[in-house]
Amino acid sequence: MDDGQTVAAIPKDWDRRGLPAWSFFNPEMLELEKDMLFRAHWQLVCHVSDIPNAGDFITLDVVGERALVIRGKDGVVRAFHNLCRHRGSRVVAEDSGTCKSAIICPFHGWVYNLDGTLRGAAQPQTLPDLDPVKMGLKPIDMDIWQGFVFVRFKPGPQPAMSQVLAHFDDEVAQYALDNLEPDGNGFFTEEIEANWKCVRDVDNEGYHVPMAHPGLQDLYGPHYYDEPFSRGTSRSFAPFREGTGRLWSVRAYKAVLEPPERLDEDHKRAWLYVGMFPNAVFGFYPDSVIFYQEFPLANGLTVQRSATYRYKNEDRRLRLARYLSGRIDRITSDEDVQLIKWTWEAAFSSGYEGYLLSDLEYGVKTYHDALRVLFPVLLEDEPGEGMVEARNSQLLAAGAHQP
Image 1: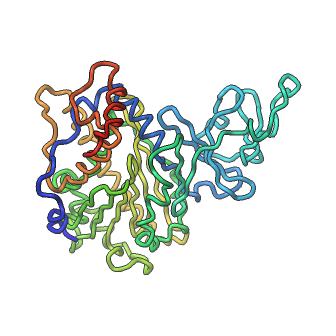
Image 2: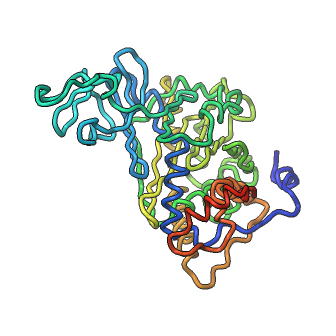
Image 3: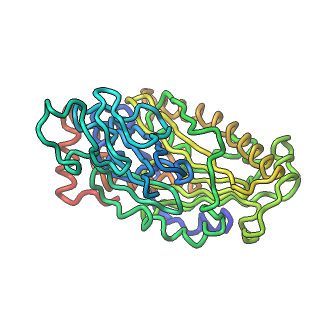
């Protein structure tokens, strides 16, 4: 599929306006997003290869919630609130690590088994009898798709993530995701001074690639295309352009890359991206698999979290290809950060009148439509102080949430 085919599938008369400026800086809107998006939708934590052995764990902090994903002695991966049942302390303080035989709260020393049940409290004679299951760590909804672990902090509108992503199963099967392992660099986080939606708006379109990303333009150029958000996901595909490339990293990457035989002809020399509503993206490359996601920390502060996975049978040539694709990605990410900050600045300008979206930014439009389903208040002028949640609830009750 080329750009012409993609554009031809777009409705002729669609609303080219983006979200209203107030939605980027209204603090009540952000609190509503935290509750209805980040707590009630699935959040990507890690790959099962990040926690290969009993007691291995990964933690994730999202909008005031704290998740603990840990592998038990029985080999089962489980997810809990990182919250001691005694006083609410974190039961593990690190981002990742290993609990040798039990989880021991660093506050008062309550001990939990690796399956979350309470083993014992410090000085139990000072406490009533405690049921080991009822007073065990509180479980969180968890789902695993192709080895990637997702959690959800409260009930939400999405079905299991493995169902949401099921229509990609056949395409991504060739990437042998059960053969992945962490690249050894852990999870990378970066704070960006902008509203989190600014990150999504930059990432959800490739219209800016020719101007803003020389590396990506050199790698795949006009062959890149975005598909709109549908059923909670989006897809972007980037076949490499012909030629050796002008930039050093692109030229070297194309020269050293020997795609695995398990990839079909379309995917041997291409990058595939899968977006997941509301805030995460997979990148499937011939040499590696990546993901990145963002969470709001405050109204003008967002943290972006990412990880890279290599193949267990990686040889020297594939390792070099992975290094080069990562270099291209890092440069692209730095370029995007500047665009994100400019998008954030625009919302405060008296001259800002919203977006005028190109057909090549239809992915932004369909993402905004998905937001408007949950937040029909985005279709209106800014409500008065203290009225955003109430007005949104009124509109939802009235059925005024269809884009």
